[in-house]
Length: 177
Image (tube, rainbow, N blue to C red; front, side, top):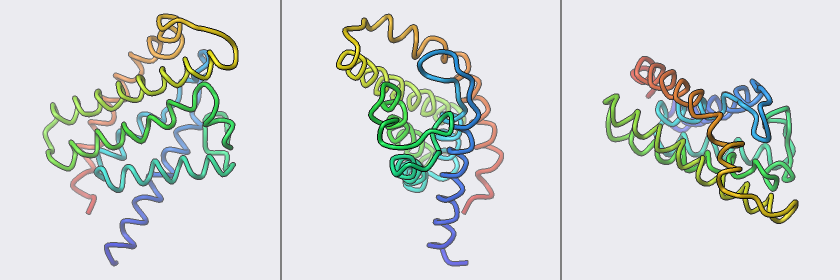
């Protein structure tokens, strides 16, 4: 099988995994608890920054075009323009950070720190986006309020996702070409 076809297959599988994990959702506030971040960090850990980031970009493009790939089977530009859209866009930076580190090392500590950094970047991007969109549509909201709604409830679940992502990356990476 040619390298191009293999890369396309990996990217398609990565995109499908993100979509599948978006559908595993528990509503806990304005930002639902999903397994998307798990999928993004795992895919970037396995596929590296290029294929991992392209997987995320294809996922976002599909959602922007209306495919029901976002949480709650949502899709369309309205989801991306909404208060939680920044977290979805933040996945791009998450994949870049995790993938760049994964391309350079197989060691667990740097990869764990990369996954943590990627999720923190997603939190930062999504939180700023949430504040801007919320302020424009509803009124001013404080940083602590946004963090209480959109970040603090997800810290422990995301730590578990990082542990699972590390485990899968470590076990499966040797099979990825």
